[in-house]
Image 1 (tube, helix red, strand yellow):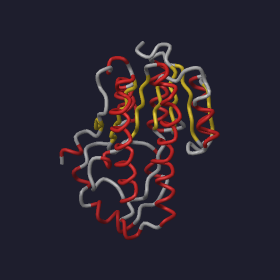
Image 2 (cartoon, helix red, strand yellow):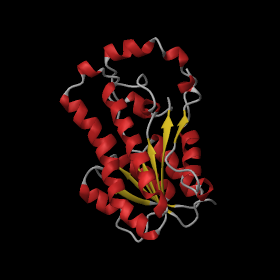
Image 3 (cartoon, one colour):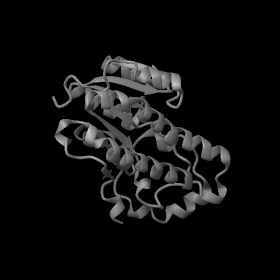
Image 4 (cartoon, helix red, strand yellow):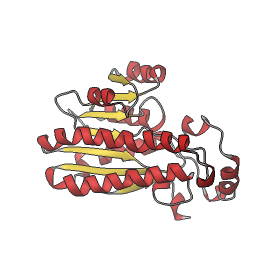
Length: 241
């Protein structure tokens, strides 16, 4: 088992990709700490995997403190994120901007800032950020979500460059259209949806959360010891179009 004896903190773990990561990492031998705001769904993950649970807002400093209040953290997966309903920039209000940036950028920023001293002291550790196909292009989501994932990619590359020599790796994954409930929790902006709809024919089949988790397990394992500062697409070739 590739993650035997390692401790992994996974945000956004109540459903979708985060839950799939928790299952895969546990199967690979890791000790799992799952974090999410959805207490009901998170409780089901805990019942299934018999792991530790932290329920709360990932941007809350008290929640961050709980996440890393342990002897060691070998793996941090910043997976929690929210969409922006395909909203074009001229229709994005301040509330949407602040909400998406709060979760998608401020959350991972604060988590990485908190865990890095612990990893540097240990001389080892790996951080995996869930970006998106939207981190690589301008036409895969609304304006604010796209900007947030570009920002997260920037944090990924800066962290890899600055801390790689101290034993800490930081990579990102860029899922495409993955079959999760995340996409069905909000009505799309009609103007944005109309603009994107004509490109839907370029999309391959929807991916499975487990397919993303399989790549994640490799990237956080010692098998990927020489992979640092990379963003790897898991999109069925969507970005080839």
